[in-house]
Image (cartoon, rainbow, N blue to C red):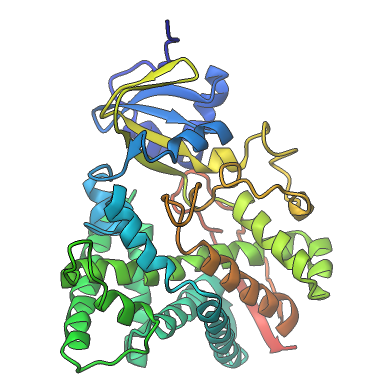
Length: 416
């Protein structure tokens, strides 16, 4: 005997998901008093679940698969087609190993140095400006950082256009109308450009440094020993550039947290590594980033007396798990000290996915995110002074991705 999964009545709830954004799954988990419920999305039966135990089973590769799961609007904007996020089994492990090979301590140290350099250049510019829109400017810092670290040559006059194209990819998947189509066109442009670069690397016309993403991905061979198709290699290079540019969202929320919690700012001024690490982790837990992850049931199985049928779309509540009172004390309170004795579970804290980096679908760039946030936070707290004038600093849990409405305007920027 198995239990019936709590079910949301109605023909389709895709519009409800768009209307409720980050809270869609969490709201229903609370109303059903369960960590799992059944609904219908995009005309298909779907299971939504959240919490530590749900994350544990969701990232079990014998129970769930990713290939062919992402809706076309997501593949055409956010992920691209045939990238690492869409693979399963040995093909996924082999491709993931390619990504992890560029995450060595040496490469991460280089990334930190590059990030600091571009923050320093931006700070010189900002001192000459009447006001700075932090999110917009940080997108360009991240674009320059990503390209230099990845070995992707980009002319200065093209940086803003590239930053706008990369941001369109992660801002447009849930958009409707012109904004969504702008994201699709942006991906097509950048994929074509990077694909041409891959060809030039293989022809010896462009020579990126060994160990960079462009070099590594251009020469990567699949399980059959073949070089990746240039279009697929292009998608994977973008899977380095786009997520680094998206860190601008976290950096903007970091500035918001520094402003809203001055007592935490004082702790950060000491430069204590543990305080910085805890603050960065709490920003990633507390503020909205990815709302959920999607997979499909691989074969029929039973979990907690609930039957999961083969082919069923399943969504894991990332935001809700990071705000789950069964896992976190007072989850709606911003409290970096909660990470002082955190057990490091790969399933309780999942802003960029859960599970194992090498064998599973946890984001390969999580270390990159943390290191870039640390360098950026040091600039915001210890390397510069600025004023935050009156503005709308509220943010929505409906809009995906979420962002402070004013994008944080700062004035009177001075090097400290």
